[in-house]
Length: 238
Image: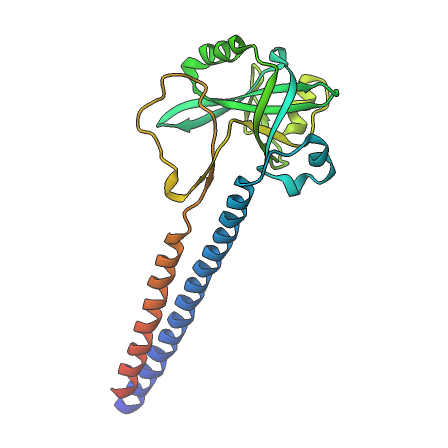
């Protein structure tokens, strides 16, 4: 009787160890896949970073091919229809992204993210932008996701979509936008500041996630899977 109970426990323990082994292998493989995908994206952005600025006619021809490419356009700012993406925390402070429509000379309207500022400093940040009196925008092409967003008061949005903002301002805008003066930051080249900048708004950067951590996670999960093998050997011998 005791022999049967002991055998049954050994079988159950072995089954649990096999399941644990498979679980750890799946987790490790998942982390390897994430590392591979992030490395591919990083390599792509590095190659984009080395390309010259794109012309607007080429963007319209094949938009997705030119994601994050640098571009410079001439036109004028429509500060009468300035918008804000609110409830955004940076530097540990609650703030907003300042979104301004830019009317290109050839009657094209493009939304531009001009940067972020703390809630209390938004009026000063907008004033700083208006005082520059520039008729040029330089930045990187971005395609925001199409999604339902919640409109608040005073042209403020919890998140934003170009379609919703187009309806708000009363004219159509391109389905792509520009992140003004954006730089592509790879891995440890990106620094999160602990001190607020002296002038606002602060330009946004495009951050490429550091992929090395996924290799460490994969190593951890594969190590656990090896331990389960030793566990199965121990159960078999005893």
